[in-house]
Structures are given as C-alpha cells and as structure tokens.
Amino acid sequence: MIAALPPPPPTIQAPAPERSAATTGQVRVAAAMTDAQVRVDSSFRGATIVLYGAVFNPTDAPTDVVVVVRGPDAPVRLVKKTRNMGVWLNSRPVLFEGAPGFYMTASTRSLGDIADFGQLRRLGVGVDHLRINAPQESRTVTRYGVRDVVVSRLGEDYLDWRRAVIRLREAAALYNTDPDGVEFVDQGLFRAEIDLPAVAPTGQYFAEVWLFQDGEPVSVSNLTLTVEKVGIERDIFEFAHNRPWTYGILCVLLAALTGWLASRIFRRS
Image (cartoon, rainbow, N blue to C red):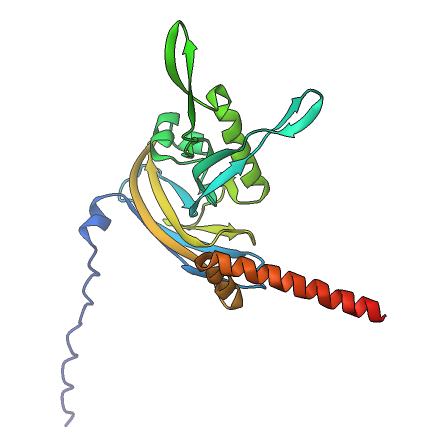
C-alpha cells in the first residue's frame, strides 16, 4: 500500500518593495559622491571625484541634469598695465571679494538649451551668471548736471575686470564648463566627474545637482566636499595663519642661517 504524499507547502510571494511617495508621485533627483573628503599633502597632484545619482521621473517628459560645484570664496587682487608718459606701470589694484576659488559646471547638454537666460541668472548657474562681488570703493562725480553722483570706481570697466578674473581662473583649471559632463549610464542613472587641480584651494566645497524639466528647475540635491591639508603641510599652514609674526621671524632667521652656512661652505671650498 502506497502512502499518500503530503500536499506541497503553499507558495509564499515576496511582498512588493515599498516606494516612497516622493519617488512615485513627483520628479526628483538624488546624488552622492565616491569621496567626500580629499587630503592634500606634498605629493598631491590633483584628484578626480565621481559624482553619481539617479533621476526618479514618473512622467514621460525628458529631464536634464546640471551639476554645479563651487569652492570656498576668496578675494582676488588684480592690477592692469597702463601706459603713463611712455612708461608701462601697474594700475591701482582692484580687489574682488567673494569670487569662488573653484567653480565647475557639468550638464547633459549646453546650459542655453536646458533653461533660458533669466532662469540661469536667477539660480547663478554657469560661469556667465557667476556672482562675483564688485569692489566697494566708489567716488563722487558730477554727471548730467547733477553733483555728488556716486559711481563705482570701476565704472564701465567692471565687466572687463570680471572677465579677467574668470579668464585667469580658467587658465589655472579652477573654472570649467563641460556641456557634456553628465552622462546617463542607464535609465535614470547618471554620473559626472569632478576634476580638482593641484592648485585647488582647501576648504569646504558645495555641490548642487539640479534637475530641469521643460526649462524649469524641479528638484535639487545638495552635497558637500572637504579639501584639507594633512601632515606637515597642515601644521605649517596652521602655524603660519595662527602666528604670522612668529612665522615671519622664523623664516627670516632660517634664511639668514641658510645664507651663513652657504657662505662658510663655499669659503672652505
């Protein structure tokens, strides 16, 4: 007599993964970086950081991603060569305050094709819309028959000085615009590379990942990146900034000692 086999166990179906309301109901972007901290030492020759993320788009409308990375602000001192009585001299220095030490934009296509001029200017996205504070110095002149009219010392030359700031930073690879810097590697998944040159300033960097749809910003993800000195370089940097007088005196003494030793060595030879 053959015993009846027991019935098979009931089929257990795995529950469907839950999705947040923000993922299913609205367009948004999420991003992260492979490394949020860069250590700078004597062997630092630059670094490349990969920024990656995903676009959650429940609609059929296409989207664009724009990555903006801004480094710590620092003053910029500029002079211009002027000819005076046949002699070329440096003009009075102009100090720009609030110019970022590093600025990079990467996008899926040209910024002008993603959003209009006014939208980019309002968000401060792109080198052309970068906010650089003008010098506070001013003078009073008489113009159009009105006395004591306050005019910026740069006047109409402000744009030329501003272009000079951007041109110098671009030549040092500190400012960069890449219209093809954001690449979609899969449906909704994208990546971009942040190239930090060896002269990149230390401090805290801020990254904004904008998601555009039909020329309008619909979502943004904010990230931070820290570039800091380590080792003996950091100790010297902090000592020089915390005790500048002591650091200056030690440099003078070290230079004098080096010169004295060199004179003794060459005298014997």
